[in-house]
Length: 441
Image (cartoon, rainbow, N blue to C red; front, side, top):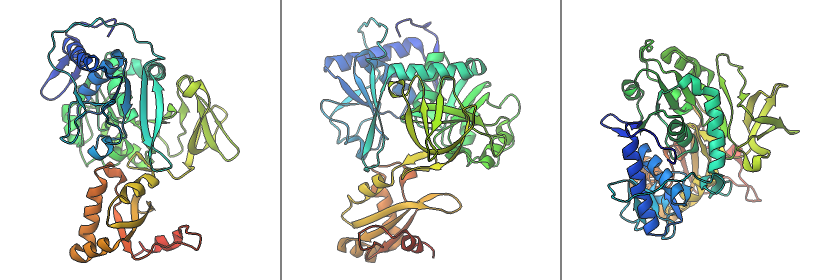
């Protein structure tokens, strides 16, 4: 913003519109004006539109606001973060939310953009914590910029001015970096929409594009004809969880290139990458990233954008090679990945227990053809009355809808069992074998 770009420089595109730098700049100034007029110092940034996200991000930074990125933009989740002193900066609002600052719009104001101080521009990302409450992960613009520089050094020449399209949300750190901030910094246009359907994204993609996707979407590519040379993307990115070898091969067959998988987390940032051309392809560290494992094989990483540029321990067990590459073995704690999203089982249980129908609940991963969450639920008297009235199928639909106020669809249990008493031992600990048996029929 300080150095500027040509007025007609294309920032973002959609099916119906193109946003140029002149409009982008004016939208940012309009948003800065609202923030400074109200003396705002912290904002909760969540938007439906990726262009609005970019406007809100830069406006908050230049207005010297700390940006809070909630785990999702569900109304039930936002109430945990939005306050009078920390309003909702967005292109959408909810009737029950009186603390709202609108992004974009017309303005006659002027604003002199200065270079940001990257160490004092602060963000707070929130991920599922082991206690069931969202865990704060602070970041600085310095850390973000360091990571974007690494991404550009790895793939900038390959992508050149490719248009970026994605199936993942910009509300998650991966989507924010790869769909919005990296394109902006590198001068690539990005599509403002999040595509749910592959055919729609393929139809919207111009020649020389890049797809930002996830294992959840790449494992559900419909049976479409392989793309011709003019249609195939320059690059397909995948992050958020492990991509199966079968899905990688199918994507390569359909799109003409193997997905580039990015391994990392909110805490560590991007760590390593691979193109899974064989079932044993390891991950290779990104430029400037160091790796090590402890005595039980738990992986730690260090880079210019890890916290204090020091070693950060991950939740993963890995097999490490002498060149720093590694093969992931499995997760080391209770966090699970469902459809590429990191889910805290404790968090799902916590929100489920808010229902008057629930006395106690156990959430766990049911190993089937595709890993999914299962819920063993001990109902209250009111819960059993509802069970008798509507039946188990409608009751679990009701509870899924209840959870959906707080959590994304990947965190909603797909199989349910309602019991008088949960299987617990004399110490009150769960008897997993008996819990598993509930779901055998």
